[in-house]
Image 1 (cartoon, helix red, strand yellow):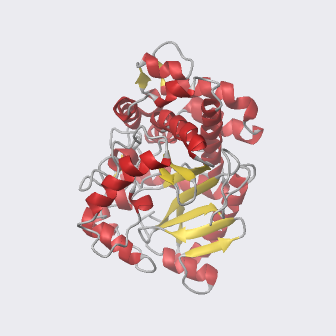
Image 2 (cartoon, rainbow, N blue to C red):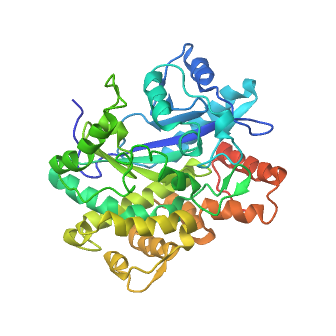
Length: 408
C-alpha cells in the first residue's frame, strides 16, 4: 500500500528526452542500448540514486524522474542535470545525445517511429493498433509531469479545483514545440495541438483535455473512469489496460497512489527551466488551494468548455494569447483583459516570496523573453532552412548539456 501524503507534502517530477544522432540530430531508437549499458542488462527501470530512468512508448524517448516522492524541489535541477550528463556520456560511443524541447523539429513519425519492443510492449502494441502511434501526437512528444498528492476527498476537491483552473495558462509558460517536419506550425504548443486529438478514436480518454467538474473519488469513477472502461472494452479483449493510464486528460487523478498528475507542461531546454516552471505552478496552486486568490466555490464552478476555450487559444498563441473572459481573470484577482504573460507575471509577484531564489532567474527569463517556443521562433527568424533549424536545435542540445537557458 502506498503511503498517503497531505497536500504539497511531497512532489514527483518526470522529464522526457529524445535520443538523437549528434551530427544531424536525427532520431536514434536506442533507449534499450542505453539502459543495458547503464545496468549491464536490459531493464525498463533503473534506479540511479534519487533519480530513476525508464523507457517510454517509443524507443527513442527516455524518462528521468524523481525516485519516489521528494520533499522539495530544491537541488532537483542539479540532480537531473547530473543524470543528463551521465546519459550523454553513455551515448557518446553511439554518436548520440539527448535533445530537449517537446517535439523533434524534423522527425517523420510514419517512417522514424519504433515502438518499445521489450517489457510492457503488449500494451504499447495494443495502443498502436487502436490509435496508430506513428504520428506526432504519440511518437514525437516530450513533456514534464508534475505529481501532487492528496490525502482524502476533501483534499482532492481543493487540489482538483485549483489544477483545473490553472491548466489553460500552462502553455503560456511552457510551450516549446513551434516546429514540426521542418516547418513553423503556427502553434506555440504543437505538442498540445496534437494531444487534443491523438485519441479521437476513443474520445472518452482525453475528453476536452480539461477534466470534468468532479471533486470526489466516487464522482470521478462514475464520470471519467466508467465511460473510459466501457469505450475501451471492445478493443481490450485481454483486459491488459488500466483505467488510470487510459485517462489522458491534461491532469489525471491517480487514486492508486493518491496523486494528481499534471501533463500539459512542455519540456524545456534544461532542467533549470523545467524546475523553475514546476516551482511557479506549484506555488500558484498553493495560493488557490489556500484561498488566497478566490474561494473554493468560485474555483469549482468552472465548466470544462469555458476553460478549454482559454487553453485552446494558449496552445496557439502561447504567452501572447489574450484572455478576455473577465470572470476567469477575477479568479486570480485581475480586473481587465490581458495576456497570459501578464497573468503569470501577476501570479509570480504573489508567489515569489515562497519560491526558492534559485528559480528566480529562469522564471524571469521566461516571463520577460517569452516561452521557449517564442525564443526558438525568434532565433530562427525568417530562415527555416534545415541548416538553420539544425543550428538552433544544436544550441538547445548544448543548453541541456550545460543546464543553461536558451537566449539568442
